[in-house]
Length: 362
Image 1 (cartoon, rainbow, N blue to C red):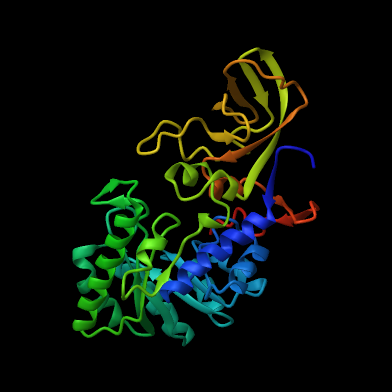
Image 2: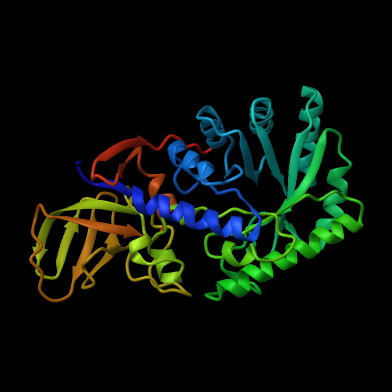
C-alpha cells in the first residue's frame, strides 16, 4: 500500500455494526444507518445483514449506487426541489422502496406534480428542525405544513424525521443521554399532535451516533439513523462515544520531510483529511486535525493541500520514510476524499474496495 491511504479494521468495523444493531433490537426500533460515512455498498450490506431495515442517504445519486448493489429500502433524508432530482428519485422508486424528505410546501408541490405526471405514489416524511438550524420545518409550524402536504395528490406522508445531533436547548452539549431523550420525546409529542390532527404518522425517525442510544429508549420513537458509528473518529472519541480501540478507520501516511527537531511533514493534507471539524472548538476542543496513533506527543497542527505539518514535543526517533496512522477528526468527509480504501481482515490481508458513492453530489 502506498500512502496516503485509508485502512479499515474489519473486526472493529463489524463489532461497531453489531453494537448499534443490538441497541436498536433491545429498544425495538428500526435501524436505518446513514451511508454518508462510508459510501461503500459492501459495508451497507453488512449493516443490513446485522439487522438494519434499510439505509439513509443524502443524495439521489448515492441512493442509486446503493440500489445498484442490492439495497432495496432507502430514505433520502434531504429535500429534493429540482425537477431533475425528483424525476431520478421517481425512477428509482420503481425498483426499491424509496422515502423522500420534504421541508417546504414548494418542494412537496413539485414532488406531487411529478408523481402525478408519472402515475406513482411517493412516500414522504416531513423534516423537523429541533434546534440545529439547518433544514427542517420549525417545530411550531410542522402540524400546519404537514396537513397541507398530506392534501397533495400522489403523496403519502408516512412520518416525521429530524437530525439534531449533540445539541440541547440550541447549544452543543456533551450530555448525550439528555439530548437524545429530549430529541425523541419532542418528536413523539409532535407525532401525537399530528395524529390528533388526522394524519397517519407511522414513522418517528431520529438520532445520530451520539444520541441514538438514548433516543431509542423513548416510547414512540420508531427509527434511529446513526452514521459515524461504523468507523467512529477522533471527534467521537473525544465526545466519549467510543474508545480509540473502537475506531475502525485510520489514514496511513508517510513522513516526507523532517526539517527540524519539533516538526515533521507528512504526505497528507487537506486533499487527504477533512478539515470541516476544526481544532480548538467548543465543546470538545480537539487537539489538531487528527489523532496520531501511539504518539501523544505529536500534534497534527496544520494542513495545506498536499502537506500535513506535525508538531513534536520532546524527542522521537521518527525519520523520513517512516509511516504513521492518524484517526481523522471527521471520518465521513475524509472518506469522501478517497476513491478507494483497504479493509484489513482477521488474517491481516488487505482487500481493496472502491468508495462507490464518493463524489455523488447530486
